[in-house]
Length: 114
Length: 117
Image (cartoon, rainbow over all chains, first blue to last red; front, side, top):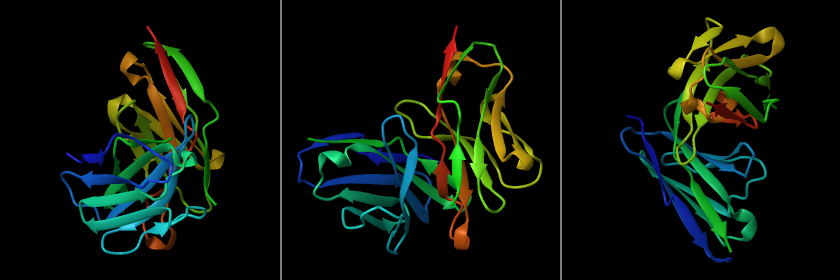
């Protein structure tokens, strides 16, 4: 149990286009989902906290207009990277939390912007 | 602000040897501490967590960690390493600022574990 999926697992796009990444909790409901970014050989950095039915809370330094987060249901959150540029290339990881002290991580999405 | 330091970027051990991965944290209140393991192509998997109570925490796969408040440490240990333990390990501290969640995790830089046969 407690599986979180992400789609796509890898995506390559042209500079200036937008990319949507889906995060789904497959066998539980998640009131809260988190989005992280991981640079090569670096740690995970929390980008935003998303609660179902409300606006996401972004961490300092994260552009909310560039990284649009939608948490429309208790099992789905999406991250849209708008007008992507090469510096947005990274590994994006989501996690889903059924209860406050527990979260389960997705396998990540590798984004490459050319 | 909270922070986590994992001093060892890369550790190599022989199969069957004991293992200790170091983690030091900085947090103003009682910390909520976690160890995760990340294998290629898989999501982070929780090994163990400490919220309160017994400072020696048992986790999955034979791992344990000890919370030492005086040293601000939460080191991960395993008495005998298996080849399948090769992966990257992350220590994290969670905050519950404003009671919103313990999910606002701050991660350490990670320690890559290589296991020699």
